Amino acid sequence: MKNYTITVNGTAYDVTVEEGTGSGAAPAAAPKAAAPKAAAPKPAAVSGAQGAVKVNAPMPGKILSVKASAGQAVKKGDVLLILEAMKMENEVVAPQDGTVASINVAAGDSVEAGAVLASLN
Image (tube, rainbow, N blue to C red; front, side):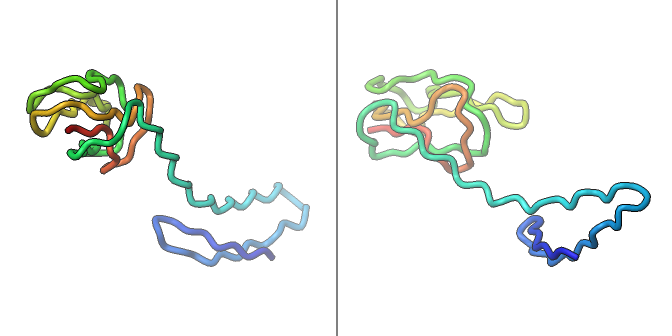
């Protein structure tokens, strides 16, 4: 008998698995409890220092393309980057007029909801 603690959706379950005797069919392998996934390291800013206005990811997804660059002047509503989530392309836009201080992601990066994607001055 082997004892395992398995966590599913944040709930821990204590499970006891009996080892096979070798007769008949081979015993099924007990699933191993996966270690919690460590947060991906934050990418270094593609450009200089962080600005005063943070532009956060509205949902988890993958960065398809970056449309703005550091030092570029933007108006409220200008597209900064394209975020793919749930098979849809979502435009991440500037929340106000300003200058792009930093772009913190690159095309192909996966991001979590709330991650800082860019900053403006």
